Amino acid sequence: MGSLPRRQRVAAYAVMLRERGGRVEILLSRLAPRVSRAEMWTLPGGGVDHGEDPRAALVREIYEETGLAAAVGETAHVYSAHMPRAPRDGLLVDAHAIRIVYDAWVPPDAPAPRVVEVDGSTIEAAWHRLEDVASGAVPVATQVTDALVDHQPHRLQRVAAYALVRRGDDVLLTRLSTRAAHPGRWTLPGGGVDHGEHPSVALAREVEEECGLPCEVTGLLGVHDTHFAGHAPSGRIEDYHGIHLVYAATVGEGEPHVQEVDGTTEAVAWVPMADIEAGAVDVLDLVRYATRSTHD
Image (tube, rainbow, N blue to C red; front, side, top):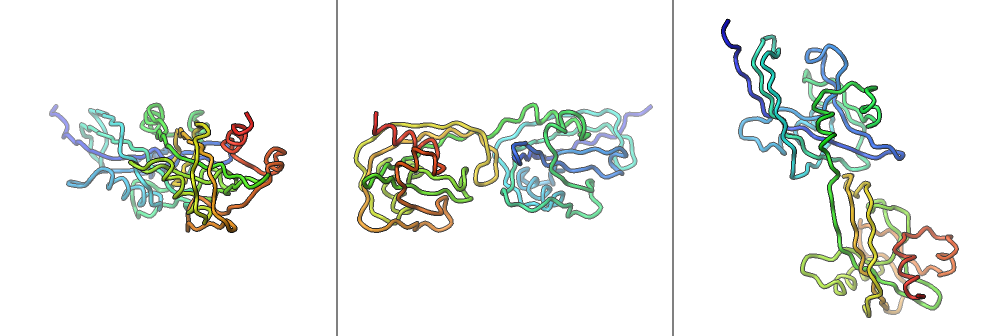
């Protein structure tokens, strides 16, 4: 008996996660009956064309299978599967699959997924709860479980500078927009420190953008940090570590107003300290840290 024809295929796939109502969901594609007679869900993705960058191939495949415009991370896991006797296009072949699995994500307001490709290898796309995948309630291909074992959220550490600005018994606060990680909550004015930028210079710039007032930074009050996993404004689930340099500062005369357009700040106001202490205003822990530091 002669050896079977060899087929080697390189394909790129994505682990795409989102959080909804406190539950984590994964975007999966259902294989067409011609590929799997039984119901079977797999990672969105597909073959890499000759000369095509794998990440570009994945963006194309995700759109074809889900109708969504995805962003793809820069690192991946590589899996190799050798199937000496596998059916392919009506033939029995000696198949070798090389699978490159990336982290990918879509914006929080992305539309519901839908298959765009006609007569492709998938017939449906949907978000499924991870717990249903783990329990077997959603039948998935081996590559899904293998990828989930190795998947780790993207780790991001960010250094930012914030200002504690007082006017009598009031504190200057900004309200986070839907582009931020905690929309609707109030925090101190400030933001990220650019590479090579002194934190006090960054802070003066950020305060003017968010409050519309010139800012004079005085002394460092302390360093606060936060660590959590959740959605970034891009829609990517991150393991986030924020390091916050908290400064005392003053601002010029006039009523504050947001200058930055389509940023992470939607409002700015002088807030009575009594309202912060009473919990009448929903503030981030950073605010409580900063106001306590001036009392200690």
